[in-house]
Image (cartoon, rainbow, N blue to C red; front, side, top):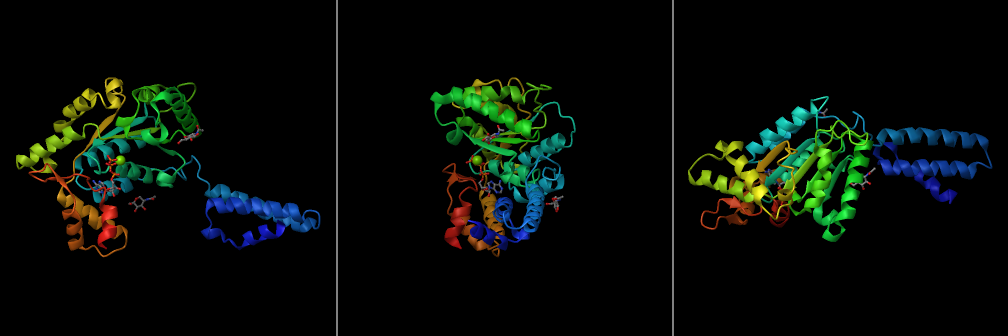
Length: 345
Ligand SMILES: Nc1ncnc2c1ncn2[C@@H]1O[C@H](COP(=O)(O)OP(=O)(O)OP(=O)(O)O)[C@@H](O)[C@H]1O
Ligand SMILES: *[C@@H]1O[C@H](CO)[C@@H](O)[C@H](O)[C@H]1NC(C)=O
Ligand SMILES: *[C@@H]1O[C@H](CO)[C@@H](O)[C@H](O)[C@H]1NC(C)=O
Ligand SMILES: [Mg+2]
């Protein structure tokens, strides 16, 4: 066993991942235990190395400190402007909301964003951008938590268990790190009772059970309201008006109404809306042919390929568009571009 552990020495610190350092740390400690009986000098040296590696491990280990959690406002704005296509309203709201919240040292409540829109229009994509410009580790951060109803809360019969579990998770994680981020994907498939159970955390409380939730970020993602957004976008298109002329006010009333009146969407049952717990409703417009082309070109660039317009066109042409007669909006948004591109290049 001692022999086997010595081979761990071949790791170099610069290329090491945290887990490996951790293993090595243990390895050295065990070696020191092995040689203990024979040579006190070696033992001391080994323990010294062990302690040093322990420090290095702590250095690489993510912690709830400004070293790991620092908001890059420029980074977020650049990402929204350059990498998110066709979402002028979402870009503006997200930038304003996140900047306002993270530049406020003493927010009165956690930030609650509700992202709505057609499939493949960038809701998860934007959540990722926010995480990447706030946590050094981005979506891999141990302070970012993603919940998917179908994955985490699949059985309606176990709703009571899920409720208390979710409350404990939120409480535990915010206790560990006030600047935690919770992303609820497929919010429209979430059991209404579950949404109700997180309401207290979204509200204007100084503290609940001694824990303050005011620095946390909650992001809800759903397709709820997507059809009413699409309807408005189509009306503008039919009237020959520029997509960029669509304003939040053109969507907002219809959006809250359609979310509110949709019996299938969990939001309907809850007072998230009438209690004003959601700070910003963020509509995502359905994407057009030209945006799909942009997505394809961006994906080529991300793969270090020479951006090829004819390939991008080919990819965009092969998608389906709706409504059937006008063929304006991509049925799957930009969602299938990644796999489609594998096929063409
Ligand atoms: N507006 C956009 N600008 C640039 N890329 C986009 C945009 N929308 C989608 N994409 C690309 O498509 C991928 C899938 O999009 P995303 O997962 O964000 O869709 P979504 O809105 O969450 O859809 P769903 O409602 O089906 O979950 C993204 O990772 C991104 O590469
Ligand atoms: C913030 O983002 C910008 C733009 O992406 C980048 O150039 C810069 O290095 C980032 N700053 C930090 C401190 O990471
Ligand atoms: C934090 O949340 C995760 C789920 O993302 C959960 O598994 C974990 O137990 C929570 N931590 C605490 C301390 O509650
Ligand atoms: Mg999504």
